[in-house]
Length: 135
Image (cartoon, rainbow, N blue to C red; front, top):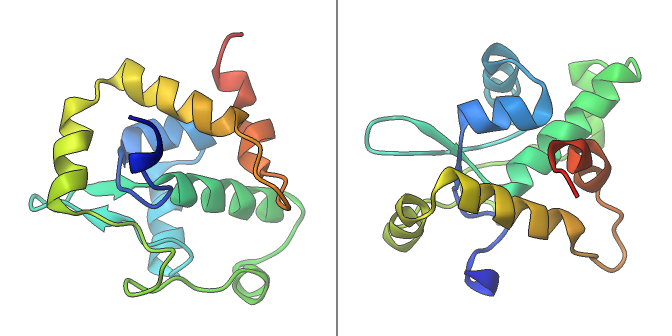
């Protein structure tokens, strides 16, 4: 799979995101309502989240745990619109790839992404989600 999967490609249903972030569906929908994340929607209106969405949710969770309210989070984090580069993309190609991936393959893909070093940015997702995987 590798590089053809971009960080904003819609891959994860809300159930997996809930497990990964320890957030409830209600919390995730609330952050979406406040335009802090913009998951893609399938034809059946199912939310699909990207690596970027999961990372943003973990950043929001960390800020909430530090006592920052939604207004403060909105000032710290730029709102995401459906037209922005950070918005989750659901294309015909990404939908085909997502359907080809089994849940174990999604987990391996996420693990690889977690272990990847990105210059200039220490990823919160690496620390927050590292407990999700056995070494």
